[in-house]
Each structure stands twice: as structure tokens, then as C-alpha cells.
Image (cartoon, rainbow, N blue to C red; front, side, top):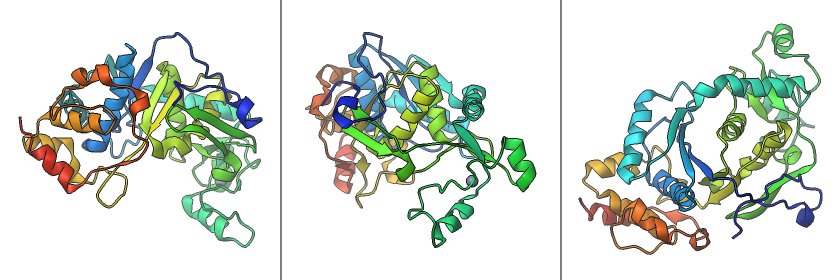
Length: 338
Ligand SMILES: [Zn+2]
């Protein structure tokens, strides 16, 4: 395991050389839940890892609610999430809603358009699907075929000429973009092959996740990001955005996922796993922390607080495999009541 990201152009040819050298700057980390449901054991484990990593380095921790998906997000979930995090024994130095920074995220999308790094796109998901099924269309559904490239001057030109709503897509090239993840090691993609020109502003004018997270992490001065390794594949797109916008990327720690009994990524709909429910059933939060600590390579008694486990936290001890939450995991937790 390496500490933080380092430039890897020497090892990997002409990979985008980002300045990810270590510095003595203070660590800034963030917990970034989306306020759309109750937290589950998977969140507990990844938020504890982020908290341990940050607090071990005496870093500053920001709680940022990713609430741009406004249809599902709500203040109700913000309060519940804060309560769940407090129940786990986590604290933070600052808290804000991502939507407060909406103007600067939208501005970044418009800047990319003005500089020729993005273009208007009027394609719906259905349009992209039918282009992909055409005889000479792209072979994968996930790669945008570039239908709208070089067609429209700006958003209003695209909307006026087509009568459709327009979003914005980033113009990617064949140049490899990659990183050295602190947990997963080197990871490189050619964006033209993995996703094509990707969406930065949706047709309803809500910034896409990729752009929002980059602009926010830069604005908040975030130096390290801890998150599930299902997001490793979106990191090259984010690095492309950091580089093109002239912003500094954080170090990345992509951690193995927590899976449900069926071996699928634990989801908010796995209601039996919600922290709220465990709490209502009388489970001791220190048992949840001890479980998360054990599956993070920390040996603990059956109950421990996040703060008491902190001195033992060490990234090099993180097990490399996913962790499965089964009925017996829950039975164990339910056996440890407050
Ligand atoms: Zn299009």
C-alpha cells in the first residue's frame, strides 16, 4: 500500500501526469452521504474508515450532503443521517449541503463549454440506446457515440434547433488517464473506450455527479477521499475534470465493498441492515464500531468506540477483499445490547 497518490507517468508511459505528490499541507477529508435514505452497515464502515484515516492525521473533516438529486433528497434525511453518524460516535468540523454550491458547479460546466472542452448534447437515454444498436454503432451501451459533437454553438442553439432540452458533455480523447490509488494501486483508463464523451450537465441542468464532486472537493480543499471501490471506475473521469479545470485532485483510497448475503453491494433498500433499525432494536453502537474495526484490520473487543479504535487504525492492515454481511453478522450485533 502506498500513502497517497503519486505521479505514475514513469511507470505507465504517457498517462496523464497529475501532480499528486505528497505535501505537508494539512489533511482535509469529507464524508459525503446523499440524503436519500437511512445509512446501513456499508456506510458505517466506509465513514468510519474515512474518519479514522483523517483523525489519525489530525485532519479536518467535512460532512457534505450530496443533495443535487433534489427529487429524492430531503432535510428529513439530513437530520436522520447526522443522528446516525453521532450514534456511531463520529464528529465533523463543518457541515454543508452540496446544493449551496450549485452556482459554482454550473459555472464550471459553462467554463468547460466556453473553452471547447464540452459541447451541448440533446440525446436522451433512448437515443443513445438506439444509436448503439445501429449496425455500425458503438459496441457497448456505456460509450456515448459522440452524436452531438460539433453540432451546436451553445445550449440555446441546441435547444432552439432541436426543440429538446440540452445538457453538456465533456470531450474526451484517447489519452490514458489514471492514478495510483492508495489501496488499489495503479488504475488507468482510456475514456474514449470506457465511457466516451461523458455528461457533466444533465438535460434538466442539474450538474452530473462527476462534475459536482470534483468542483466541491476542490472548493473544500479536500486532500483525501475514502470511498467504495465501485467508484474507482469513475475516478479517471474526475481526474480528467480536475486537470482540465486546473484543480488539484485529492489522494484516493478505494476500499472493498460491504456485500449483502446474495453477494451484491449493500444498498439502502436492504432495510434490515439500516443503522436506525439496529439502534431501535437496542444494539450497542460500540458493537457496530467493533464490527467495522474488525473488517478494517483492527483487532478489538466486542465493543469499542470510534475514538478508542483510532490509535490502532493503519491503512496497511485493511483486508483487500469485500466483506459480506450475513444473518449471523446481524445476530452477533443484536446479541450485544446497550
Ligand atoms: Zn447527444
